[in-house]
Amino acid sequence: MNLYPFSAIVGQEELKKALLLCAVNPGIGGVLIKGEKGTAKSTAVRGLAEIMPALEHSGEPVPFVDLPLGASEDRVLGSLDIEAILSTKTRKLLPGLLARAHEGILYIDEVNLLADHLVDVLLDVAASGVNTVQREGLSVSHPARFVLIGTMNPEEGNLRPQFLDRFGLMVEVQAQADVQARTEVVRRRIAFENAPDAFVYHWANAQEVIRRQIDSARKLLPLVQMPDGLFGMISQLCIEWGVSSLRADIVLYKTAVTLAALNGRTIVTPEDIREGAGLVLAHRKGKKALPPQTGQPSDDRKDHSEQNTPSKDQPQPSSSGTDNMHDPKEGECGEGKCEDGAGESIAGIDFRMGIPEITQGEPAALPDALHGRGVKAMQTPKGFQVRAVQNDSATDIAFTDTVLHALTRDPGQLHIGRQDLHQKVRSGKAGHLILFVVDASGSMGAGKRMEAVKGSVMNLLQDAYQKRNMVSVIAFRGVEATVLLEPTRSTESAGEALEKLPTGGRTPLPHALQLAAEMLASWAKREQTQPFVVILSDGKANVPLPAWGGDAWKQSLQLAENLKYPALVLDTESGYVRYGKAKELADALGGEYLLLQELSASEITETISDRIDI
Image (tube, rainbow, N blue to C red):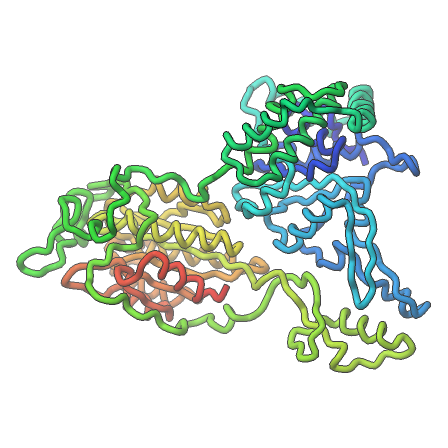
């Protein structure tokens, strides 16, 4: 099958440069490619394998190994050969994917979704060039020198910082924004699909030029020298980029030397260092996981007690003791008193707190268990088996490893005892889709309530990202509910969506519950996904579903009863007089109820984490 030629890729010069650098010098540590779908990531990686010089010892094309996300540790590293044990009664290593990738390319699509411990192992082997496998008393080491290339879509979440630093280079690719370049991409792709043989032949000379460039650079690389004065330039650049890891200095040195070799030189120049800096340092400099705070006052580091001091921005308790939330002011609506979009405003995101602690005294104690439907399902162990460990009290038995241990202990016959039992080690329990249903009606605009809610949600989103869950946000206000954030692992996307969320208008709670049911019905069918619903609202529904007819509150209760997923309702109601609608909503859901003002942001995060049993 013909592959699209590497030399025919339009633009994406940084991407092609990073791949060529790693092809010449795998010791750089591989390359991470970030970009949305349709930006030639996979095309470039697969095309690279075709232009790399053939293996010297055999003349064979370089191997290209695609590592699947669900691969077990044994499949990646290697395992004992069961056939050899049964036929010859000898223990022998069955090579894994790392052995197959030796002197070639190991490609991981969506590397950010790969199990953390496998990412760690792969990066270790890529850096050392040696893979050591220890199984059932057998220890074998073999060379595993390969070009490690990982691709990922930032919308699906980032790699953890400690793994980002382990990739030698990183490049971000974007779709072509230039009309001429975009047109040329389409022309070439159509030509390739219509006549692949002719297209490949047309680019054969350009492919050969790059192949020879790689071969020449490899031979020249050991001869390249860096003047002493340029070592200081490397350190200075790393400091200016705010990079703390010394790994960056070493990788930048290797990159500059390789750039010189690619350009046919034996002396590194300052331009080589500057050119390599963007590829080496961009993913290592200090980055905020959360979006910058906007609209905050200059003195936002004031003591938390000052945040609770009444001001002109916060509603004052009235002399009659009624909930001032029902006395509409700017950016605020009473129950059924706002026109659609009236008093609309956009609150900032307060990352320092949850809802301001209006009540005095200790926060309410957190319940020990989640009361409601779905608890048992939430505690069921799921996830891919990544390896197995010997355990004579195993409950989740790894059958193959258990039998294998028995055979190695006594190859003459199969007799399984407790000493042979192996426990499955999984990549983690089933991922969760945490659906936040956020009330953005007019009543949420009072007392910086929405600002605090956004901060609480962002803390929960950050926690969800670290645990590799997916998050989604539905917002409801005016006369409709909308999916503000499609299911994602990206805190950056979530922050941008929440930052733009305005408050104002009425409370279409039934619309939000119906939309949540439709979304979860689809996602619940997906393997390794367990829904969990977090509703932040005072529950004061006043916009019914037109097709249903009747009262908005009764519709809300009916929809809640039909939503068969674990749920937590965080009541945003405050003031002296409370209607308790959110508590009724939680009861209808069969979920848990907590008063948001009695919890700090960290307690809310801990509550969610405990409830989904991560």
